[in-house]
Length: 156
Image (cartoon, rainbow, N blue to C red; front, side, top):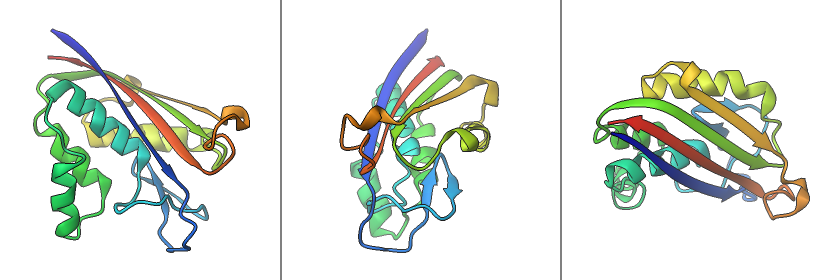
Protein backbone atom coordinates (compact mmCIF):
# COMPACT_ATOMS: atom_id res chain seq x y z
CA UNK A 1 0.00 0.00 0.00
CA UNK A 2 1.25 3.48 -0.88
CA UNK A 3 0.59 6.26 1.63
CA UNK A 4 1.21 9.98 1.26
CA UNK A 5 1.06 12.63 3.96
CA UNK A 6 1.67 16.36 4.28
CA UNK A 7 3.49 18.04 7.15
CA UNK A 8 3.82 21.78 7.75
CA UNK A 9 5.74 24.00 10.12
CA UNK A 10 6.70 27.65 10.37
CA UNK A 11 8.70 29.79 12.77
CA UNK A 12 9.50 33.47 12.93
CA UNK A 13 13.08 34.68 13.21
CA UNK A 14 14.38 35.09 16.76
CA UNK A 15 14.69 38.79 17.58
CA UNK A 16 16.13 38.12 21.04
CA UNK A 17 19.69 37.62 19.82
CA UNK A 18 19.88 34.18 21.43
CA UNK A 19 23.05 33.32 19.56
CA UNK A 20 21.58 30.01 18.37
CA UNK A 21 22.42 29.00 14.81
CA UNK A 22 19.89 28.71 12.02
CA UNK A 23 19.42 24.99 11.31
CA UNK A 24 17.47 23.71 8.30
CA UNK A 25 17.27 20.00 7.41
CA UNK A 26 19.96 19.37 10.01
CA UNK A 27 22.35 21.77 8.24
CA UNK A 28 23.73 24.86 10.01
CA UNK A 29 23.46 28.11 8.04
CA UNK A 30 26.40 30.16 9.34
CA UNK A 31 25.87 33.87 9.91
CA UNK A 32 22.06 33.70 9.69
CA UNK A 33 19.48 34.57 12.35
CA UNK A 34 18.05 31.60 14.23
CA UNK A 35 14.37 30.78 14.36
CA UNK A 36 12.33 31.35 17.50
CA UNK A 37 11.63 27.99 19.12
CA UNK A 38 12.08 25.93 22.27
CA UNK A 39 14.04 23.47 20.13
CA UNK A 40 16.65 24.29 17.49
CA UNK A 41 13.70 25.46 15.33
CA UNK A 42 14.52 23.26 12.33
CA UNK A 43 11.27 23.89 10.43
CA UNK A 44 12.18 21.38 7.74
CA UNK A 45 12.67 18.50 10.16
CA UNK A 46 9.53 19.54 12.03
CA UNK A 47 7.48 19.47 8.81
CA UNK A 48 8.96 16.08 7.81
CA UNK A 49 8.24 14.69 11.29
CA UNK A 50 4.64 15.89 10.99
CA UNK A 51 4.36 14.20 7.58
CA UNK A 52 5.59 10.98 9.22
CA UNK A 53 2.85 11.45 11.83
CA UNK A 54 0.36 11.74 8.97
CA UNK A 55 1.36 8.23 7.90
CA UNK A 56 1.94 6.54 11.27
CA UNK A 57 -0.74 8.47 13.23
CA UNK A 58 1.74 8.59 16.15
CA UNK A 59 2.17 12.23 17.21
CA UNK A 60 5.77 13.11 18.04
CA UNK A 61 5.76 16.90 17.82
CA UNK A 62 3.62 17.87 20.74
CA UNK A 63 3.43 15.28 23.50
CA UNK A 64 6.82 13.61 22.96
CA UNK A 65 8.61 16.90 22.23
CA UNK A 66 7.56 18.25 25.63
CA UNK A 67 9.25 15.23 27.20
CA UNK A 68 12.41 15.82 25.14
CA UNK A 69 12.51 19.49 26.13
CA UNK A 70 12.11 18.55 29.80
CA UNK A 71 15.19 16.33 29.33
CA UNK A 72 17.07 19.25 27.71
CA UNK A 73 16.91 17.72 24.21
CA UNK A 74 16.43 20.47 21.62
CA UNK A 75 17.92 18.79 18.53
CA UNK A 76 15.15 18.23 15.96
CA UNK A 77 17.07 15.26 14.54
CA UNK A 78 16.08 13.42 17.74
CA UNK A 79 12.39 14.23 17.12
CA UNK A 80 12.67 12.95 13.56
CA UNK A 81 14.37 9.73 14.72
CA UNK A 82 11.54 9.22 17.22
CA UNK A 83 8.96 9.54 14.43
CA UNK A 84 10.87 7.11 12.22
CA UNK A 85 10.61 4.40 14.91
CA UNK A 86 6.94 3.91 13.99
CA UNK A 87 7.30 4.27 10.22
CA UNK A 88 6.88 0.92 8.50
CA UNK A 89 7.89 0.63 4.88
CA UNK A 90 10.18 2.35 2.43
CA UNK A 91 10.35 6.05 1.69
CA UNK A 92 9.56 6.48 -2.00
CA UNK A 93 9.80 10.24 -2.14
CA UNK A 94 10.00 13.36 0.01
CA UNK A 95 9.21 16.77 -1.44
CA UNK A 96 10.06 19.82 0.66
CA UNK A 97 8.76 23.27 -0.27
CA UNK A 98 10.32 26.20 1.59
CA UNK A 99 9.02 29.76 1.66
CA UNK A 100 11.42 32.39 2.97
CA UNK A 101 12.82 35.74 1.98
CA UNK A 102 16.08 34.85 3.71
CA UNK A 103 18.45 33.03 3.79
CA UNK A 104 19.24 32.05 0.22
CA UNK A 105 18.24 28.40 0.03
CA UNK A 106 19.32 27.31 -3.46
CA UNK A 107 23.08 27.13 -2.76
CA UNK A 108 22.42 24.89 0.27
CA UNK A 109 20.01 22.44 -1.39
CA UNK A 110 22.66 19.78 -2.11
CA UNK A 111 23.78 19.74 1.55
CA UNK A 112 20.18 19.67 2.78
CA UNK A 113 19.26 16.79 0.43
CA UNK A 114 22.28 14.80 1.62
CA UNK A 115 21.45 15.49 5.27
CA UNK A 116 17.82 14.44 4.82
CA UNK A 117 18.85 11.30 2.92
CA UNK A 118 21.16 10.33 5.76
CA UNK A 119 18.58 11.07 8.48
CA UNK A 120 15.80 9.22 6.62
CA UNK A 121 17.98 6.27 5.55
CA UNK A 122 17.14 6.75 1.89
CA UNK A 123 18.90 7.81 -1.27
CA UNK A 124 19.13 11.54 -1.97
CA UNK A 125 17.49 10.89 -5.36
CA UNK A 126 14.28 10.32 -3.36
CA UNK A 127 14.36 13.87 -1.99
CA UNK A 128 13.35 17.06 -3.76
CA UNK A 129 13.66 20.55 -2.28
CA UNK A 130 12.21 23.72 -3.77
CA UNK A 131 12.23 27.27 -2.44
CA UNK A 132 10.40 30.51 -3.08
CA UNK A 133 10.79 34.00 -1.67
CA UNK A 134 7.04 34.43 -1.31
CA UNK A 135 7.23 37.73 -3.21
CA UNK A 136 6.51 39.68 -0.02
CA UNK A 137 2.86 38.61 0.05
CA UNK A 138 2.87 37.04 3.52
CA UNK A 139 4.72 37.64 6.80
CA UNK A 140 7.16 34.92 5.72
CA UNK A 141 7.52 36.50 2.29
CA UNK A 142 8.32 39.80 4.00
CA UNK A 143 11.30 38.15 5.70
CA UNK A 144 9.86 37.57 9.17
CA UNK A 145 10.29 33.78 9.24
CA UNK A 146 10.35 30.51 7.35
CA UNK A 147 7.46 28.23 6.37
CA UNK A 148 7.82 24.67 5.09
CA UNK A 149 5.53 22.05 3.61
CA UNK A 150 6.74 18.45 3.32
CA UNK A 151 5.00 15.76 1.29
CA UNK A 152 6.11 12.23 2.13
CA UNK A 153 5.27 9.11 0.14
CA UNK A 154 5.92 5.69 1.67
CA UNK A 155 5.43 2.17 0.34
CA UNK A 156 3.95 0.42 3.37
